[in-house]
Image (tube, rainbow, N blue to C red; front, top):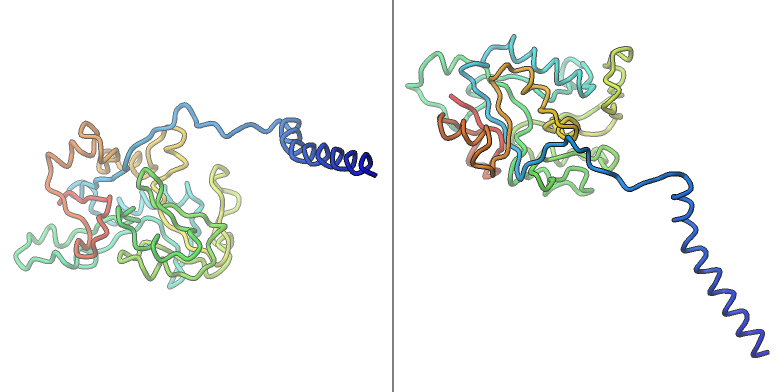
Amino acid sequence: MKNSRRTFIKLAGIAAAGLALAPRKGLAAEGHEPVKVNATAIHAKHWAMVIDTTKLNTAEAINKLAAACHHDHNVPHIEGKQEVKWLWHDTYPHTFPEQENPHMAEEVHERVFPLLCNHCQNPPCVRVCPTKATFQRPDGIVAMDYHRCIGCRYCMAGCPYGSRSFNWGDPRLGLDLGNLNPEFPTRMRGVVEKCNFCVERLAVGKLPVCVEASEGAMHFGDLMDPDSEVRKVLREKFTIRRKPSAGTEPSVYYII
């Protein structure tokens, strides 16, 4: 009896060890390897953007950048209240409502301004998301996991900048399916989306598509690096940010 029991325990232990090792062997057999970082990827401690509104201030110019952004990220074209947008434009009073000045130069007051997610240092959208579908990366970018989004829209309520859009219907119905960007996924009904600072391009060594298309009107770089392009521009030019009283510390600066 004792020998039988000892034999059973020994065999059970061998079987358990085999089960523990089986998945690893299976992965190796299928050729899976750990995810490797692209050698050309560019990194920052905190990504930031500076927009020169003395150069970029017309609806036509901003719409051109929006078209490039929306095509690159398969953003659906939907008109009306269900519009989905990552990059758009608005007036000075709507862009900087706390910084109105009755003696401001008319030329500045009449400009239109490019708007996008501000990738705040203190993002309220991240705090209110119950599923962590919206989260802040170590490099400061406020990102979205569409598969975790339950469509509660708490993040939209928490964002003081109106930078998020909700897919009320199937966004694919607003896309030219023959002209999609195969390098970026389409979304689904019932999820929120927004600008992502082109994380997929940074991962392969490219700047955000709007920055590349802006012909020098938009600057992008590491806010924590005193030698970066954005820090150089911030030293030389006067800039403002949107809704400073919200305490979100936006990572998007505007040269006025």
